[in-house]
Length: 174
Image (tube, rainbow, N blue to C red):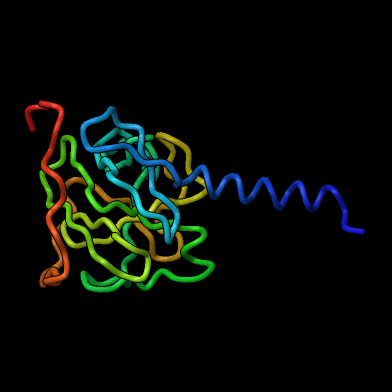
């Protein structure tokens, strides 16, 4: 018979992974979305800015609507995610067929790849980290992942397979 503590711990890990990215909101609703797990689709996800402590300094970073920090993976290209298997379970991709921006000046696009409709900011594919909470950045520099900021330089040669994101909504004046 299996140890009940091991089973409970396994369920807790699965719950944390699920909470890290399974909800989504429609483009016109209040921001309550996060990154759906790989293989799931969502109507919309919102990318916005928020202050957070990064390496001991307060910076403005990109977050999903639940306030979870968004990261990019340095080895990725604008045309392909290299985050697969166990890495993708720790770093769930931000998936949405129609992402919306709130307060960001960069370009949101969608790349149809192995993860589904993965959201990119200035060509950088976006991810969350399962150990983060709203306003908490714990993945900076871990496994070549870096927190995404509004000033993230565009990747040259964004692939033709990307589509523009939904227009910025909510009358935020950005």
